[in-house]
Image 1 (cartoon, helix red, strand yellow):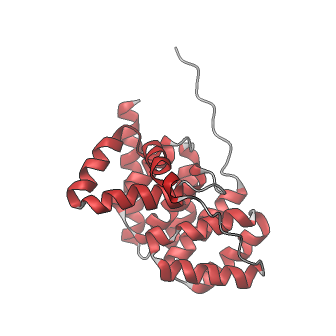
Image 2: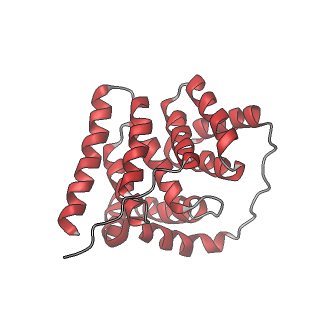
Length: 213
């Protein structure tokens, strides 16, 4: 008989604040975002705030990312950080590694499916999405995934949400933290139907995980 699994500690406050900030950026309400950024200024390392806002352009586009960073400059008074100046040649191998961590055993199938949609999209996903952006230092991968979950839950994008809920678990985020992150941001979703879809998507991820573990 296996020993009972120890319960995870509660979601750390600084992670909860980052998650809330990402969801607030996705909801498109400046007042909600400004409140979240004030909390981030108080509780989160500035570099982590920068990275969470920066990565949002992959999911929300440049206008939202630019607006979020502009408001962060106003709220924090902090100057922009120095650019990393990374060599682009490192992005592809880093992207393959990070993407395979997030998708686990589903990684080969993901590459095949995206390639069928368009081969350039497959290449950009790895090179830009996971290599250039999500593989950057400055924000631990599990925290990045929880911020992505927050954005996708508020956007009501259940297909992508399903993938990144699994991704968070694949990179070692406790299920309890994922649950808490969703509870934090689903009230920001645009409708009760969207909130229900977020909960249903998480239930499907949990059911599948129970079947395979």
